[in-house]
Image 1 (cartoon, rainbow, N blue to C red):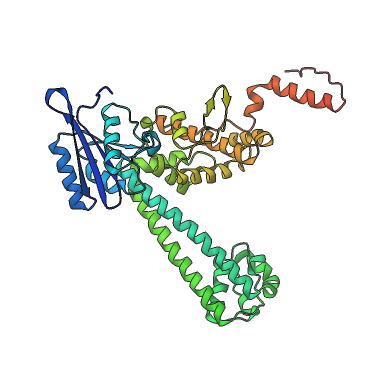
Image 2: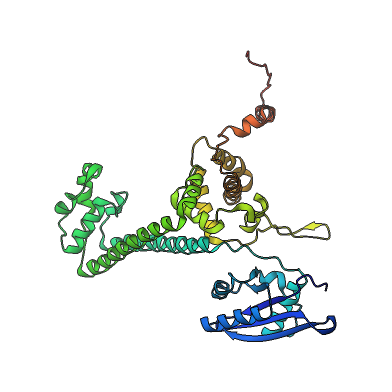
Length: 411
């Protein structure tokens, strides 16, 4: 293979050790190769950095191995041009496999210029990503804990959730705290209702009759304490995310909030996954492909096989899905019209996926240009091609046995 990178290095990363291979010019025009193993402790990684500097290496490639590549990247990113590559793109021919052969093969591909680097956002965005992902994990845990509360109440025979729409609101929480404290009189509990819920006091008295035993008080008290802890941690993470975003990131969040279905938390999660610099993605299609929002391409011998999309970031997928579900419920919006147009033919899942693709394309253009979102309107498809809409409606009437005569209305 032709040598493109004169001094190349590659790392085979594991949990406890890193196998490093360098290929540099030798005597007589030959290529010299050296392979050394290092520990993944901080001292070991600093030794690896000095060893690479001694060989005057500029480019270093490594595979994305779980989360084990992250500490290696953190130590080397300031001194070398790093490439994180997909293991699927550098798979060897089946045969003898060792850490040494893996590192050597990766190094040969790098020096030949055959590696394609994966997207790794800058350090501030990576830190923001850690915060947004952990906050999302805590929000999911809070949802699970709330479900446990509903199940525990069902065991007591208390049907508070049949009367109050939110049992963790102010009224519902006051009743639950009173139950845990030992108050089981339905009259007293129902009188704790506030606001509009006071109109349902008779129904509350009936719903709050049950068999609330000490065991239930212990379980529900623990669940409520856990919910309070999770709420506190989510608020702390939200404050930290706001600080991590900085002025430029906050402006990007406000920009994304102009899109139907996207609110602050969703916008922060999206920025944490793709960043704010869209120059790393050549076009909106490149971003959608990286995110796994494009159909696959599998064709052989003139036959098209499975078009299943590749796997992308599940965190970005969850954020886009939440935004799309909210957007298709927004009346007179383009995304709602797109969903209604595609759902009869493709079904809910694929129609929603098309909306997610459109939203991600919109996000790329907005972050690239800085322009706010301008909705095309729910009647976009009708305005785009009125003749086609007319033909469709006429054919439907003719199929029902009507004779249709069209006459243009006066201006």
